[in-house]
Image (cartoon, rainbow, N blue to C red; front, side, top):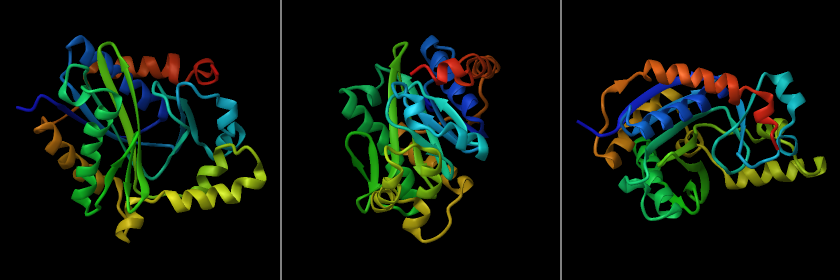
Length: 253
C-alpha cells in the first residue's frame, strides 16, 4: 500500500481550495492522515496572490468583481497567478520525507519531477527550470510554490492546459497601462500550455489521469482515490470562511 494518500477534489472556489490545502497540511502534521497528493481545479476562475504581496498593487479588484473572478491570498510566496484553464496539484509530506530533503532547490526539483512525469504521460517533453518552474521548448508550462509549516512541506503548482494572456492582464495590474501590450507579447513568448504544445485541446479530466500516473511513478505508488476526511472538510470550510474569504486576510498587505 502506498504511503501517499490520493485526493481528487474537482473544481471549487479559491477560498475552499486554499482552506483544504491548509487542512490537509494540519492532518499530515498531526499524523491523522498520510502524506497527501491532491489534484484540483478552480471554479470560478481566480487570482491568487503570494503571501507577501500587496493586494492593491497586484490585482484589479473592480475588474475581478465585474467578471466574477475570485481573489485569494495563498499561504505560499511567489507572484500573482491567474487560475483558469489549468490543473493544480498540492503535495504535503513531512520535512523528513525524501522529497523534502536537501534544501529548497532540491525539494522543488524532486517534487516537480512528478509534474514532468505527468506531462510525459500526455506526450509533452519537459524539464525543470530553477527555481520553481517546469518548461517545454523553453516556455513555461508550470509554476510552483512552497511553504514549510508544522514540520511539513506543502508544495502546490499549476499546469497550464490553456493560456489567455489578455484575460490574465484584464485582472492583474500593470505598472503602466501603456506597457500592457508589451507584457502580453512577453507572456506569449515565454509561456505556453499543454494544449498549445500538443496542438489539440487537453481538458481537466484527461490531465487528472495523466498526472495521477505521473506522480505515482515518483511517489512509489498512490493509494486508491479517497475523499477528504470529514474533519478536514470542516476545517477547510472554517479556514475558507475565517481567513481565505476574509477581506482582512486578503488585503493584509
